[in-house]
Length: 452
Image (cartoon, rainbow, N blue to C red; front, side):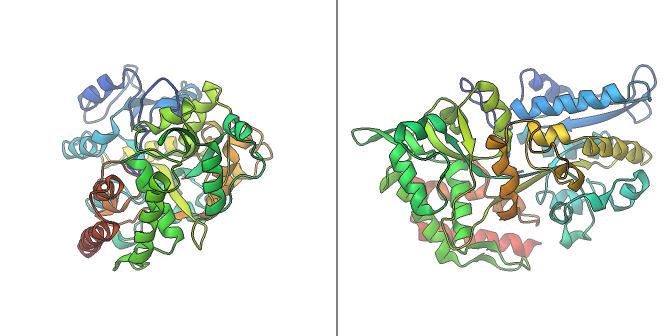
C-alpha cells in the first residue's frame, strides 16, 4: 500500500466507479466468510486430504483478474502434486483488521498481499513471518531480485529481516489520451518533460465552458488521492523530505512542501487546467474527461481492454530533481500455530514469483526479478510497450517510498483518507493556508517518528 493507501485497486472501466481496492463482484461474500474457513486440526484441508494453502488478497478489478489467473495457473500445475491454493478476496479497508483477528485466534491465512514499508507494526508484533532462513530452505534465489526490492522488503528498525517476497515494482507515470493530443495539434512523440511543458500541454488540451473546466488537461480531483500524491511527488522534486534518512526528523525543508501545495493550487485557480469537481479519477480518464492522468500500472489492463487510445510517458521534472512515487507489492506469510506450514507456503510463493512473467507484463508493475527483465520477449509480450514501457523505465527515478515506521500509514502520499490527505483537504478547498497545513503535518509526523 499504499500507498496503502492507500491502495485502490484501480478499475479503468469507463462505466464503473471503483477504487483501486474495490472488491470484485461477489467478493463481499468472500470477505464475510473469510474467517469461517473450515479447519481440521488447525489447518485448512481439501476434501481429498491434499494440502490447501489459504491466500487472502485485496486485489480487485483488472489487476485482480490477472492475479486470479496466476492462482489458477499454480493450481493447474499442482493438481497432481497434492497442494492447492484457495484464494479469498478481502476488502482492503478491512484487510489488516481481519489478519490481526485471524492471527489472534490461530486461524490466519497462510499468505497474503502486502505493500512494502507499511507493515512495521505487524513485523514488530510477530504477525508476519521473517523469510531469510525459509527462503534458503525452498531455494528462492534472492540474488535474482533487484537490490531495491530486497531492501524495500526489510525493516531496519525491527531486525532488518526480509518480510516479503517482492512481486512487482510500481511507480506513478502520466497516461495521455492520444485523441486529445491529436485534437490539440501536439506532437505525440514529445510528451512533457518539464513543469513548464506540462502546463502548456494541459492548457492546450483543457476545454472550458465560460470559467468552468469541462475537460481537464491535467486530471485532478478536489480531495483524496490525486492532489495528495501530486503534492507528495512535486514536494520531493522541490527538495522536501517527509523524514530524514535516519528517520529522526520530520518534514525536512518545509518551504519546499509549502511551494508544492501552491503548485497544486495553481492547477485549479491560476492555470485552470484542472477542476475540483471530479470525484472518480479512473472513470474520468476512461470517459475522456481528463487528458493527462498520472497513475499506476494497475490501470493498464482495464484501459487496454476498454480500447482507450492512450500512451504513457515519463513523469516530468517539475522541481530540481526528477522523482516519482515508488510502491512495491509482494507476498507475506502470516504466523501459524503449525509452523510446519511455512515451508509449503513459501514454496507456493516461490512458484508464483518464478512464474510472474504474466503478472509483470499484463497484471501490473515492473518485475523485481533480473531473469525476467532480461528475457528477450519482456518488452514485446503482454501489453504494448507504448502503454507499459514508462512504468518499467520510470523505475530508475521512482525514489519516493513508504516510511518504514509504526506511523508509516500517516506518511504515505498515496492515500485518499489517511492523516495526510485529511490535513491537505483544507488547502485544496481554500479553508486552510499551506503554512497552517505544513505546521500540523510536521507536528504529527515528528510524533510518529519519535514513536519508532
